[in-house]
Image (cartoon, rainbow, N blue to C red; front, side, top):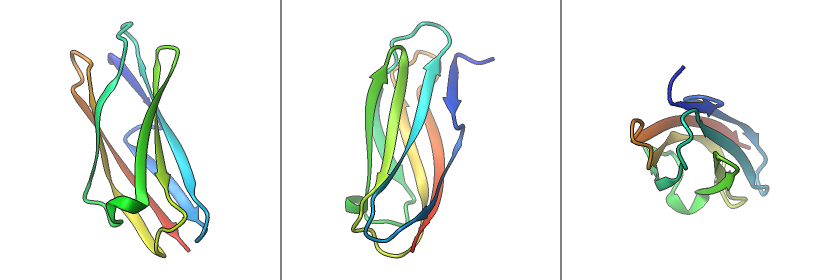
Length: 105
């Protein structure tokens, strides 16, 4: 077992997103070594959506870091895909990449 546990892993399914409704999913990072984990940067790469339609925020829950990925209600119809690069302050795991996809309809 590594120094960091990520749920749901390296792939996040957003599923069907209804047009006019925003959707959000969480990615949970849990350190196994007692590190006070923080995301130093959240960067979207290779996304099919413009930056104003997709957002990422972070919050803490005890020692867990929770990154929330949100697709806004104004997102155009079509495929939503890309990568979220979470840059961490962890001494061994500097960044974690999470691929995501979904469909706005």
